[in-house]
Image (tube, rainbow, N blue to C red; front, top):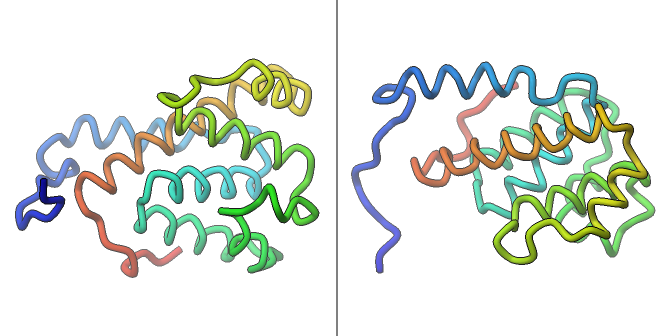
Amino acid sequence: MSTSTTRRVKLANLAPDFYKALIELDKVSDTGLDPKLAHLVRIRASQINGCAYCTDMHSLDLMEFGAEQQQRITLLPVWREAQKYYTEQEKAALQLTEAITLISVDHVPDDVYEIAAAAFDEKDLAQLIALIITINMWTRVGVTGKMEPGHYKP
């Protein structure tokens, strides 16, 4: 089965109400969370889902946010082997991000959820879950629409 096609619908143009609702959802998806953590979560989910556009966008956003080490972005796909670069809370968030993003593999294992629940209060945990769900929606828009990286400016 070919993954290449010359014609892909643009949701922003053809499903504008959905697209606008997704933008509004995105605006509140990281409320109260540390911005660096939120960017790391978005990047990691984008990497897992193979969305080059979203990976590029959120990496640029994190660098624009300031005072971020390029090494932390570069090592994100192998964060378990580079744990000294991430806080305990970031590691818990990344582990939960991977579980939710790959939900068909193991659902969300209790141990992963418990680590996240210990690292965040209930409100922030709920917000983190909302963020992970939202970025997964965006990556599906990006991958399905074959959005190409290199156009985004923070």
